[in-house]
Structure formats: C-alpha cells, structure tokens
Image (cartoon, rainbow, N blue to C red; front, side, top):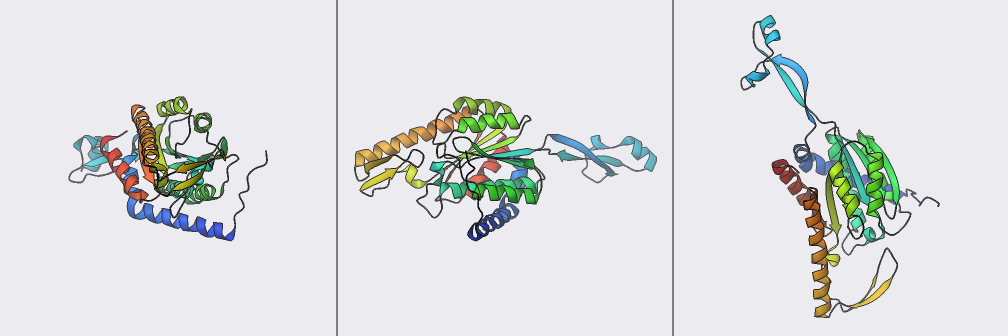
Length: 298
C-alpha cells in the first residue's frame, strides 16, 4: 500500500506555524503551571545542600555538613519528573467533519500541539500515534522544542491510509511500543466500536485520559428540513427529515445515551475524561481538567 501524501504546501506551512505559535502562547500564558501541577513526577530526588532558611523542614537538616560548617545546612530536593506523554490521535474520515469554522481534525491537531508544548515546557518526553483503520504514523517520545514542532507538523499534514476508525489497533500498538508507564491522551470523536477491551488494558497500564472532540451538529440535529447526510467513513448516503420532531428527539436521545455510556466507562476504568466541542473554547475544558486533577488526582 502506498503511503498517503504528506506534501507540505506554502499554505500548509503557514497553518503549521500559526498552530505552533498559538499553542506555545497558550501554554506560556494559561496552561504551563496547571499542567505541571496536574501531572506530578515519579518522586523527589536530591539536588543540593544549601544553607538553612527560615521555614525549611528541620528533618532535611544535613547534620554532617552542619557540624563541619558550624551553622545549619539542609538537603534540597527537587521533583523527579521523568514523564513520557503519548498522544494517540484519531485522523479517520469522521474527524474531518465540521459545521463550524474548523473541523474536528483541526481542533484535535491544535489540542495535540498545546499538550505537546505543555510537556516540552516541563522537560517531559512527547510521542505521537496517528490512527485511522490502522496506525498511520508513529513518532517515538523525545524532548525538545524542535521535536514538539515536528509533532505539530505531523498532526496537521499526515493523511490517513483509510477512512474508518479502529481504536483497538491504535491502543494495541501503543502497548507494543510503550512498555513503561506513561500519560496517554487518547484524542478522538469516539465514533467507533469494539475498543472496550483494549481501552481497559490501556487504562491499567497507563495514566489514560480520553479527550472526546465533537461537532455541535453531531450532538443535536439541526432543524433544516430534508438533509442528505454522508458517512465520511463508509461513504454511505441517507436522507433525513430534520424538521420532524420525532426524528430529532430520537437522534438526541441516542447521542445522549452513547455519550453517557462512554463517560461512565472511562470513569469506571479510573481514566480521565475531557469533553470538547468545536463551537466552544477548549482552553477552559483543559484548564478545568488540570485543576480537578491537581485537587483529586486520577
């Protein structure tokens, strides 16, 4: 199978640069501290011995150095982060739907950029898995701004091999390439089936956070008369009378039931969950999740 085109045009370069700048600016102004507080390192490691200052815990006094120097010295510890963040991002056909100023895929890419720069700002490693009906791209985790910029570029230019969604394959692949614990952001519209077992396994191995991205017209059927709808993954067409009250109510009910089931499943697995729609600012949802995570943990 030939690889999908990832040609970078002048317009693509401008778009990549805009997303990079916006992501970096949001991290610098809004999210860096919240991210660091939400995701603690693996413990504390010894950094140095320094002179005692009022308020230092007396249990940290280094008595050997204190006796030698004839005034108090304390051991200073810093958080040992050593964190790896994996972005597992859906680029299937349904992700390219959008009734607003941007598609779900464009919002997912910007979300990935913000999370990548948040990780890099805290010297964490960031890796990427892009998937549709298979794994389309894998970038091993690394540190550094240039690496974060590469992650953003791939989020914006990589095209899927197929149109359908197979979250199971993506999560199984993550299990093969990421043997150690990591923070995993699973970014998708979750419009797929058959992934529950793989999700359960991933939630046990990793610090899993599901990020569901949806469009307002997927949440509530607009009253626009007869609509010809196309499934972006199967190519199938169907005709829907959106002016019919019963049709709209049935649509809304099924969406509510599906979304509620997904949220319950994530919470039962002990995973984090962030719900984002393309018509509302995502920074508020991210910041709210980070604050909740800081207070209550997983």
